[in-house]
Length: 62
Image (cartoon, rainbow, N blue to C red; front, side):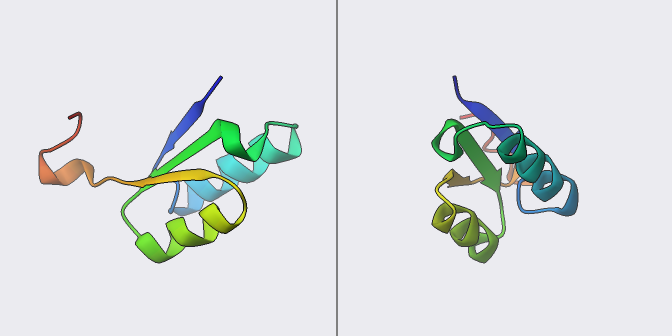
């Protein structure tokens, strides 16, 4: 099952991701969504799937 975290590049999103990983959720079961590409790259290095999304640009959901 995939768990999608919107706002993954923010403080609360990072806390949520860390909590999921500590509880045994597989990194590749987490889809990290955010608008800060360098932070998303860091999450991808940890094995998470990532996607760039900005809820204020009017394109989400597709």
